[in-house]
Image (cartoon, rainbow, N blue to C red; front, side, top):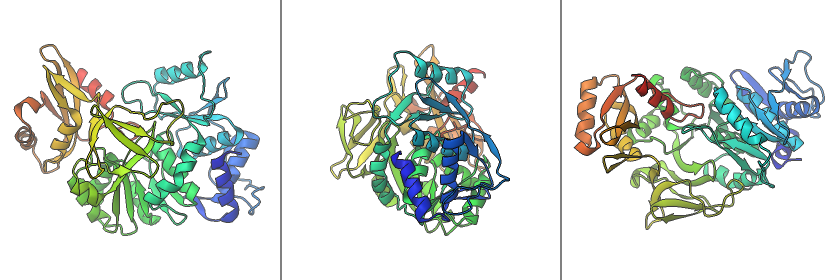
Length: 451
């Protein structure tokens, strides 16, 4: 049996009535979750809401259980493309595949037919080889094209769960709110990491941030795992305080001091933990909010067992917890350097550079500078072709409710030197996100081209 599924079986025996997953108003104990995985393996079905085990042996289910066909596309090489849009179904299907030695690959929501077919074509090529030690595949976000398939062993996560759970303060008493698709590698890892520890996952398939707040309060969640883009969405509507939240865990993407301060008002008992990671490499570095404020631009120091070096301005990582088929140390072409104190200073992805007539503009640095303005709620910078200069910079901005557009423009021009100022500032009510909660820059470019 798989390492991860065996761990689930262990918790189902040790604490069968402990809540494993809460989806909206429905609770699923460890006994129920284990039973759903077993039933999916045995019968090829997923048990939906109201599945109830009669006792710890988990051999009987309620006769009113709603059953649907397992949402898989099975390929000849043993790869199963899981295409359900619902987190619980995705999770159960993924676990049941591992139990059977099948390679699960969870598809992103709303993936275009063209990109879906490209993934299938890749998997079904006669010369396509799945790495020998691989147990499951994950998809990159696909923000710059068709998502790439990365192959992982269960061991690469299982061997690291105790370390990441120690840093993130996760144990069997943890109740963590997570939102988004199980196809997002960060969500998948964090959900399985919490279940590994015997804790509780709280989630919803609803896209309404008010529903997220309601669940957090009703379930007295202790942890929140979200990217800053979604944390901003919560703060737009949440004007009260929630004392149960002890930790908020997020990547450094578009994090700024004002967001951190507002989060501390809404969640006064929380400590913010910043991490830096990559789908190819797992978690790499981390720091507390105090360290992040003391060392502007840092993403922390390495997790135990992980080493980082800087070569020609690029970050290289040596970790035993990465995907299969890569040489170590490995780089995802992120730029940065290491301070004398051992902190990694992140400077953005190498490809995120706009060459404006020979003058290089680093998108991450421009976004960070604009994000710090009091008149700006959220900002995204994209590069567009330009006949005269080769490339130009366009800035999408969500202004603060009290900030007129003219004030925003004046603030941006005052913050940036003339060579850094965008060709155009476009004001929007919200920034579009991918299913992985990352900024959908492809869509922003489409919007601009249709102007």
